[in-house]
Image (cartoon, helix red, strand yellow):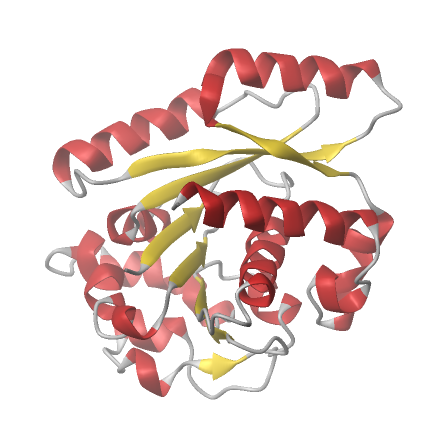
Length: 257
């Protein structure tokens, strides 16, 4: 059974796309022997998930064409640098999609309807959202089974999360009753600072058992990998960032039993 997971946080700079790219890649890597197939969907107009998986500029159509021009998703899907990991890419034209969707019937359901056409071909579908709670993110939340929230280990970590949880509540009430909070992953942890440890403690108080045991460390390699168009497990298979995202991927998959 396919699992659709959206990775969202309206606060920028929290490691959202880094988590989307590397979680998708590590799930595909971990599931290689079982032929587990993963589809990444980039609905952030910045297209960082697209470039982070090595397909920037290698496509004629994007998720914009799927959402606005009703192009079949199978026509847009591209294989990434990782075996068993495909992507529906994004580029800058997507920035106008929210305005174009305003007058569309059932505008929050457009992405969900498109995904239904390819859902059965994949075991996991991972959607990377823009850092906002606009129509693109609403489309992702409506299409998803679960929400994973990356939170950085910094002073304003919990800022805005009440608004995100309120949006989730509204989506459950009006658009997607099955939407569940998958969990919270703590990112950019710096073991040298007391602040990081304090944030971990505060987030666990707030989300209780929804917090993943795996904590993603602050890492130079994680920052370098996107500029090479590679997920961390290909860029540097032995670094701390790879170890962390492999552990997170195992946690996510094991949660399914």
